[in-house]
Image (cartoon, rainbow, N blue to C red; front, side):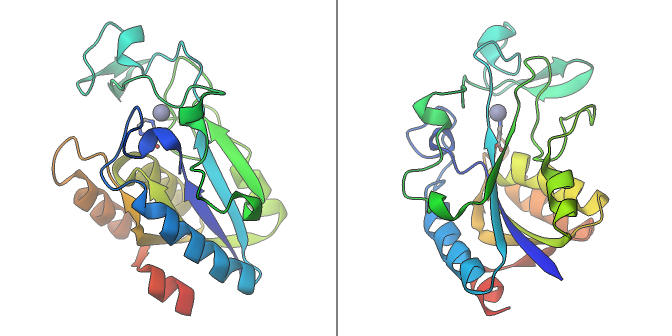
Length: 210
Ligand code: VGL
Ligand code: ZN
């Protein structure tokens, strides 16, 4: 069985000091680097996603006349209004400088359509368009994924749920995830939802010892 490690949105804007800084978001980088080292040692593939928005993205509160952190609707879908983040080509959109980026074989960008948000690394939030990720994995006969990154309650959650729907055997490396937590228990609930959809929750040390 071929496995890939999928690193979700390990970008400056989701780390403390960033535009959409997640508490302890930068603590995921050391976890990622250890998971990457384990993958290199056993010939597992390492890939990543990158949130990559045009400045005019309508999920940005300022572009939709809305208040940051409140809930609205975009293209008929529920939408949290976000601060401007991960603008294409900005420093905030870069992968974290401490991440072992040389070991990442491919990066899948998402959120480029200004009219719809895209939490999952596979599909936009309306499942209208897909990224190249699923095809890329299938071409390489990769059937198992280990997922970690930012943020637990958005991009990790929806990437994992899509991976399961697409038939991938999916693990979540829980100590490699941190959440936005607009509500205090959002991350906990997201992990529970991933687990009940069929994901296996593992620690980094369990992943390394596999
Ligand atoms: C994300 C909110 C908005 C994420 C991306 O990477 O989890 N969250 N855009
Ligand atoms: Zn975004």
